[in-house]
Amino acid sequence: MSSIPAAADVLDPDVPVLPLPDVAERLDQPITRVHQALRDHHLIAVRRRGVLMVPAEFITDDGDVVKGLPGTITVLNDSGFSPDEVIRWLFTADETLPGRPIDALRGDRGREVKRRAQALAF
Image (cartoon, rainbow, N blue to C red; front, side, top):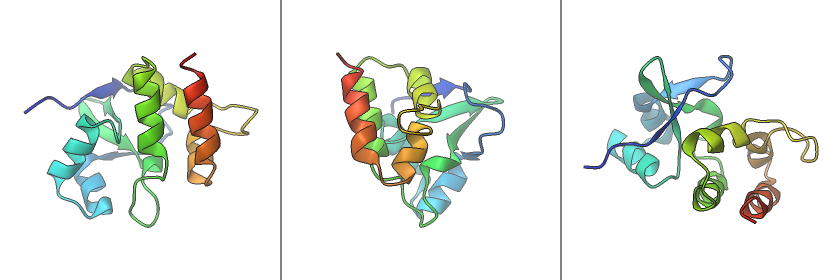
């Protein structure tokens, strides 16, 4: 079994994160599906105090992965972004959005976020 990729904890300490068992519970999936989503780059984990955690904002209140997040992560990975860089990009404010890309994804502006992610490749 391949290891689970993870970013360093490049997030602000105030950004809420969830341990993988909690992510599995919120998604109503077995933990092995969460591991696979991380390996497939549909989610990204950070290592906080030695424990793999997923930013809580990646999961909707309805118990789904935020729409457009997996595609955005894939585009950024394909553009050569490291997991650390993907996390930073998603959580860094962009005045032209306005707000952070993760906020735009949660606000149903995924098409614009993905377009910007694709533009970073060139």
